[in-house]
Length: 492
Image (cartoon, rainbow, N blue to C red):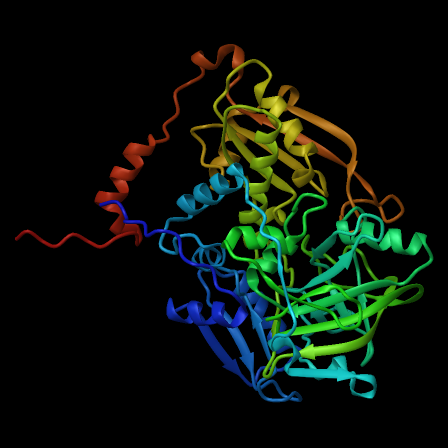
């Protein structure tokens, strides 16, 4: 019997309401006594690489005030992603992906943030000699990290000095000491473009750093929202109500009124310190350690018993690559359809490639060259351009979310001498482990056409894959054999 899908759920308004709803669906657990030096990082890696696994709050962390907490693996399940985006939490993974991609295809309406005068974020205000970033239990997430990282499931708020638009971007943030934070932004990112403009003027860049915010805002901040659109407005459109923001007392930047922790300060182009190394989403310490600009802290605001939202990258597939695959796949499909390319059936940016390095697109072939057109476009549009590696185009009988099916299509429908195109000198970055240390910035792309050859597709051997209807019939009748569904009661 087919599962009944409930209607979309109402999206939570802040992290605490989100946690309450996660607890109600049985996907939250609390751990006490784990230390920030090793335990939280080790546990987070295990949680992120195991699915299903629960969102986990670490409390009573040795050396820190009780109630100062760390939340990790928050977005490590389809149900929690559905809850965050206002989708049915009991829908199947394929149904969720389909619904979200359809919403993105139709276009997310923007709803401007609502400016208010106060909010829970100002329950505690630290200025002057009270400033101390080390009061928060920032974990050391990986064995060879160069320090503690307060910013992983975070976002930095910046403003374009020329065009006056606000960006929320997720960039790693390291604790140097009480009054200094270090942050790295890859070239080409919107926050980096803002920083470059401020520095070109010889001016300090104002920054508001949010270390614990609404998961929906965090998802927006680490997704390729189009240039010039403020993530507050996009996320407001997703949930259907405006975000409440407060004008930052120091920088004037809009900060979330309901955030857990916000740190305001300025970045001086001439003030740098060694940042890193940090284990990144490719699974390597690919960018090493280097001098990066320092954020000089002018004020700290936090709620009572604040929660750090942690989402460190680990060797994929992990929690970060999972939720980014969900978001990025929808953006990539939207980019392709915006380019007026027909016949797109499925898109998935695979977790094993960190949701960037291995992207699969299924199509209903319409004309000669269609598969190559899709592959080259997917490697060139904004969502697929940065630090990509492989784009695989398959026929519409292949489930793009099933890595084994995609590889099977590659093995049986592509001919290496005929089916692979190479794009040289594409957009890469310092995090790419395969590029020579002296040649960072460019990399190549492989477009793999794993579709039945257009010219003789009708003569290609028939696949043994069951049709969708037959597959569903098998699941309905025999799914209990593999843990899907209940075993029918005996008729005897």
